[in-house]
Each structure stands twice: as structure tokens, then as C-alpha cells.
Picture (cartoon, helix red, strand yellow):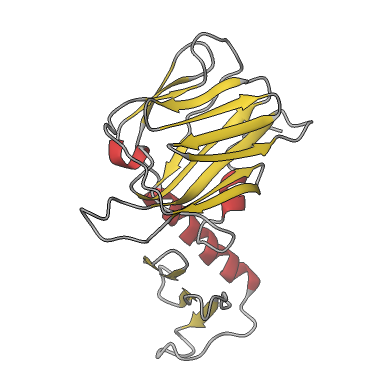
Length: 243
């Protein structure tokens, strides 16, 4: 059994009922250590095993991360265009940024330049030289690629402010751009990303320029960080299948 509370607190119960994993929520802005409880030794769950058995802890954390990834991955359809890119559709208000928590990631072959992703009138990402730039309305994030990689992991994660005339929400957008697992740019703003039509397909690559194949992007309906259940570094590592 798995459950989550917010973006940083979660728990799991092993199938045999012996082990309970619990990540408490942050306290005063600081992360608390994860807890492992042996319910056979203490059925009340009040006693934490110290130190936790490394193999049990690793398995419980891996099981939770796999479940977390599965339930937060947006179900989309990707149709290759024959030129290395493709068209992404489906799950429109989750595939489209602008609706609360959002993470977008892809593995970028080193020979891909120009357009990387484009959802007309919503957002776009492009590469010029070694600079990758993503634009969401008035919000611009950019960073440099490092030489020597056949594939670069590109990830954007954060939370968008919804239209407060319709529903209450936080007072700012927070977005961060990661290249090869490292944060290269971030922004906080009170802007709202206006989305007039979330059904517009997301075009990956440039259909007029042939390049190496870009695998289907991965979109999550959650925000990742260094301490989230699925860490941003683990997510970034999964985007490139080769060196």
C-alpha cells in the first residue's frame, strides 16, 4: 500500500505487513529523515528501526518511487513524424502546462538543433548553439549544454498559478530548468500562463529537418525536487537511454 501527502511526505506498507516506510513532511523548512518501522517487533508503529536495514529501506523506497512514477505519468500518444520528432496528443489539461504541478522531460540527441518542442500559443522550447531556451508566455528559462554528451536530459518542473478568478491557488509560478540533472535556471513570478486551447498538439522536433530520433517526452502531473519521492536527478537520468 502506498500513499502521499503533498509533494514531500509519503508512506508505504510492505505486502507482508511487516515494514512501514514513512517520510515526514518538512519541519520549519528543513527535511526530516525517513523512518522505517518493523510492525512485527512493534505493532503500534511507535518505534523506529535504527539504523534501518539498508536492503529493506532501498527496496521500500524503490517500490514507492515506481508506484509514484506510474500514477503521476500523464497518458499521452506520441506519433513519430519520420524526421526524428513527432506529435504528442492526449490528456490535454495534464499534457499542457498552466494547470498546477507540471513536469516535462525528454532526452535530446546532440544533433538536434532549432525547435525542440512547440505547443502553439502555449509554450515552446528550442536550441541555438549550445543554449536551450524554454518560453511560457512571458516566462523565459535558458541554460547551456555541456559538450561530450550524445544525449542531453532536459527537464522543466514546477507549479503554475491557476486563474484566481476561478479557483484559489498560490500567488506565484515557480519553474526550474534542468539540463543533465543540474538546475541551470529558475523563476518565480505572479504571472498566470494563459492557455486558450489545451487541445493543441505538442510538436516535438522540427518536421522539416531530419535528425536522430527523439523518444516520446515524459510528462508528470507533479513537481519534482531533490527531496521529492521521485527525485529530479532520478527523473533526469531516466530520460537518456544511452550515453
